[in-house]
Image (tube, rainbow, N blue to C red; front, side, top):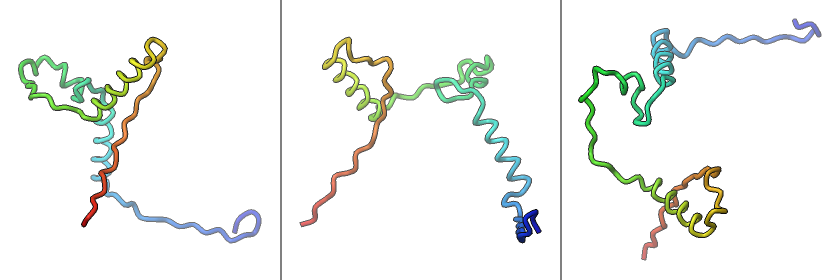
Length: 104
């Protein structure tokens, strides 16, 4: 009974994860929090002298979302000039829904 005389209910649940699974999850979180370079690689890997000459750069691909942001930024600069205030703006991009097909 609680201090006010009401019945207390306590429930205990079994762990959903094994100790091994918890260890893997914690190791993954530690790895995710390690610093990364602008390439997305771990900084420790990207700067390790043992890796000199071991990286290759494939042909670039076009980031269409980044292209859309760049075009919007250029349009704003053209319209507003120096008053555009570009250095403090955060740009987001949203994917438009596909046009619906009309069956006929």
